[in-house]
Image 1 (cartoon, rainbow, N blue to C red):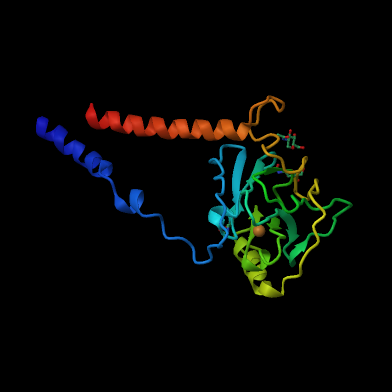
Image 2: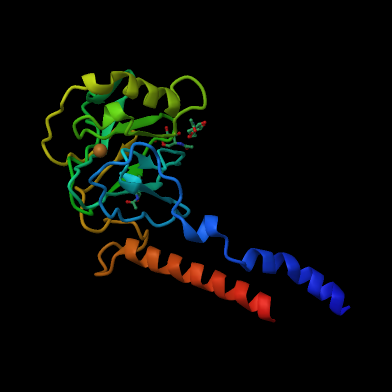
Amino acid sequence: MFKAVALALLPLLAVASPNPQIYGAPPPGPATTSSAAAAAPSAPPSTAGQINIDVGAGGNFVFSPANVTASNGTLITFFFPGGAIPHSVTQGDFNNPCQPIASVNGQNGFDSGLQMTGVQFTLNVTNDQEPIYFFCKSPTHCGLGMVGSINAPSSGNTFDAWQAAAVKIGSSEQTLQDNGPVTGGIGAIATAAPAATATSASGSSGSSGSSGALQMSASGALAVALGVLSGAMMLFA
Ligand SMILES: *[C@@H]1O[C@H](CO)[C@@H](O)[C@H](O)[C@H]1NC(C)=O
Ligand SMILES: *[C@@H]1O[C@H](CO)[C@@H](O)[C@H](O)[C@H]1NC(C)=O
Ligand SMILES: *[C@@H]1O[C@H](CO)[C@@H](O)[C@H](O)[C@H]1NC(C)=O
Ligand SMILES: [Cu+2]
């Protein structure tokens, strides 16, 4: 009986012993780390109906995650890092990479405009039947592959094909004018310019003084803490 319990605990003990690969050295970074990497705010985990994307994650020229699936009414919030390198979330056209999408039926694409502070920019998906492509308009970033997609298909005009087309443009990318934030969008709409806290990331009432994103990250931290605690209690019970 005692032996059986001790054996049952062994895997838990193995999990509990510090693993230097996880807790010690930082994970191996991507090759294209920017020299002026800012302390990027990490987007809180996504929840049902709310997808969170890091802009310039880890100081790299990426959106993370870069390819997401989102049904009608899903909110997608982009978390910009503060720092020396401006980024944008600009709606693009699969057939014309690294250029803003042309208006369709009088509707323009969304554009956060170039942002250098830790703002958030939220889209609301209005047509999940059409893929939505976006890119960063900051000079050279699109050509470095800083692009993303919402509801891209798994064949044909895929996220991978969209990114490959951007990288193919590479350093011949045209420098785009920035006129600041543009609301609206085709298939997903922004109803507000980027702001220090997302306009509706909490999904509940919009005008409380506290930030939905902060609430989410605080509750995420609590969940992690509780998980660690319950793991420890299992060990010593
Ligand atoms: C998202 O858009 C839909 C359709 O316009 C609307 O019903 C919904 O209230 C919007 N969601 C938020 C949080 O604004
Ligand atoms: C999402 O909304 C668009 C536009 O109204 C509509 O065409 C589409 O069928 C909706 N998607 C679903 C799964 O109902
Ligand atoms: C991107 O996401 C779509 C779903 O929206 C999926 O079908 C596709 O396989 C994904 N592409 C890549 C390259 O991960
Ligand atoms: Cu960028």
